[in-house]
Length: 539
Image (tube, rainbow, N blue to C red; front, side, top):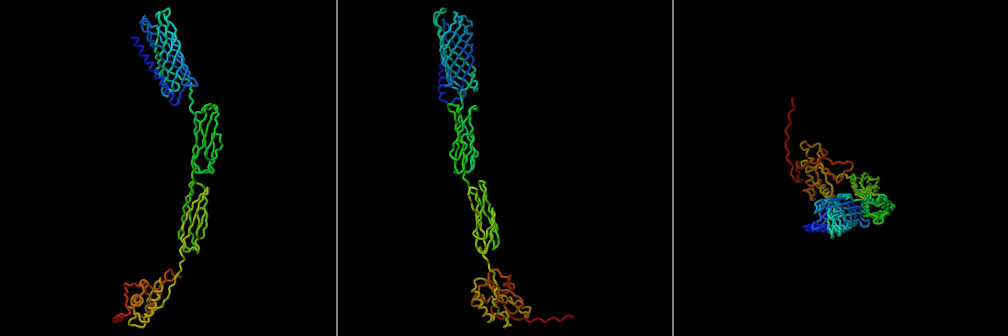
């Protein structure tokens, strides 16, 4: 029964040791470990299975005990440490006497390999040293050499403290036969322990790094950029050196934490300034490099637009030309003006154009140009129309026809008038533009009821020109008019197209041809009606 008991814990310990070794080996290929203590102090509870048999009785398991150890990790191999271990298990029950008088001292040393993980840290170790068994049976109190190994797991609470979840060690030792007993006593002890780990110091040095920045990150060529760099994880007690290099612009100075870049003459595009921070006192990995990106922007010409007010002017009249200009970069601008005609004056964003005689009938184009500090320019135009000079026209007197020879038909176009009208129609056809005013008059001696004779005469003349005569005239170019009392005649006035000179006015008023019907020169005379006698004067 005691043999089965001894084999079970042994297998557990061997399994734990193998698992710890495997995890430690895997940890070797893992990422860099941030927690690498220089020294480790452990203290905790210890349970001991002594794993021996004497005179048919198994050596007792000892449930009371503690374990103390200290591991110093090597500077060159931070996971490998020199181990010193002391444990004391006491008050084990003597199987023969029933007394709790079995005590075991372990004073061991060796090496320990530990993977310092972020959450848990497995370890494996080899032990050798002295083991003292005090058993109140045959007065055994003898030191012997113990050899063993073990492993376990630590749960990391912080960089300073960890909990040792399990530590399992196998310790082999043999008590040689002596005067107290006649045969050797072989012990395959298994020691289980758990407790608290105190980590002292730290070999881990975080990698050096740096950051660099540019201000501003976008500029136009010719503007200045400030670059600076800051190191991380460098020792504040050491003097650092700075080095700058770039792929564009002029960096000055090259050996300070902050530098400036002169971007004069640089082409638009992306660039960088590279910084290196070095600690001369560090023998390995004592520098870090970083870069600050910046770009040179493509400058843009001004945005401009022009307008004219008014857009049509006469000779001698001015127009104001206004330019609206903005520069995308906010740079200062200068302005120039030019024109295809007229007289141009002014400066800045406003100019005045005055039309001259030479501009009559033409369109003048005014061009405004805005130029910024980088000699980038944009132009805009505004058009001003100058109408042609219009000549005034005079009304022409083309003669008259009289209606005195035929008192029976005082409205009739007689032969004399016919000849005059035939010549007049030919003349009118030779004039492509303009119209003919026919102004009919009456005589002051003609009776009151015949006061419409002036209108009738002008309408009859139009009828002859457009209908009865041999040369037909466009009726739209002939206008009958009533001229009032001036004689038994119709007068002819040719009115050219255009503005009248000197404020001339057409004579008479227009006849309503819907009220006065035209009569042919061959029509019979209208019948006369007797006038009623006048009433006698009142008495």
